[in-house]
Length: 315
Image (cartoon, rainbow, N blue to C red; front, side, top):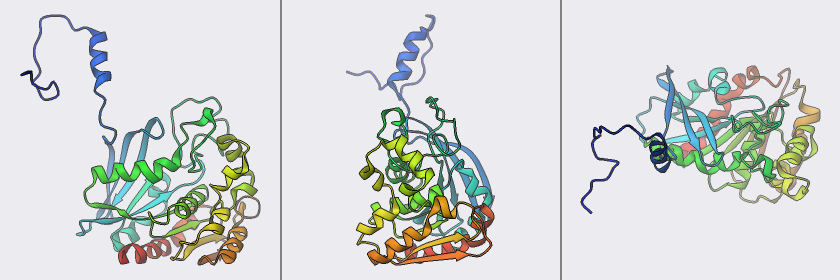
C-alpha cells in the first residue's frame, strides 16, 4: 500500500534485460489522454498566430489535424468561429488561401478549421473518387457499418469543442459561430439548424444546400446512411430549415453566378424558397462573375467575419 504511483515514480535502473511484451502491455495500459495535442506548426500573421495540431480522435478512431488562428487579442475569452471546408480539402486550404485572418484579428475572433474526413483508416474504396470517402465526410454520422468511422458531425459538434476548451483557456467555446464552403457550407447550415442553442450565427459560400436532390449528396448519403430517405433529411438544410422555428439571426449566403456547380449540385434557390416558407431570415447574395473557388471566398470573407462578429460580440 506504500508503493508510489508508477506514473510519478522516478525511472529505476535494472540489470535484467527488458521484456518487450511486458513493455508493450504497460504502454497499452496507459494511453495518453484523448485531448493530448501535438503541435505541428506555428506561424505569425496579422499579429496573431496560425497554429496546427494533431490529436487522436475518439469520434473518428484515427489521428486528426486541425488549424487554429489565435489573434493577438487582450480578451481572455475569445469567441470561436468554425470553418468547414469543401470536397478534397484539408484543414489547411482555408488557412492558406482565404485571407480570413486579417478580419479575424481585427474583430478579435479565433478561427478553427478542422479536416474534412477521417484519414488513414484504409477502408476499401475510401479514396476511389474525389467526392466520397477521404476528404468528403459531409459532416454527418454514417450509419452504414463500413463507414462507421465517418462521424464528422460528432467530431465538429462535440469532440473538437471539448479538445479546444481543454487545451486553450483563452477560448470561449460556448460563444461560437460556424461557416463553410460547398460541402462545408452544407455542414455549417445543417449543424447550425440542428444546434441553434450552440451557435450564435451561420453563413456559407456556395453551399450544397439541398443534397437530397443533387448527385454529390445522393452518392454520399446512399453510401453513408443507406436508403432510408428520412435519415437523409436529417442532413439536408432545405428540409431542416422548414421545421426550424429557433432561427433569430439572419443566415448569410454568398453564391457566385458563374459557379459551374450551381444548377446541378448547389441548388441555392431551393434553400431560399424553404427559408421564405418557414419565415427564416436569409440574405442570399448572387455574385455576378464569381465561380466556386477560393478567389471568390477571399473576395467576400471579410463580410462573413463581420456578420459573425456582430452576434459573437453581443453575446
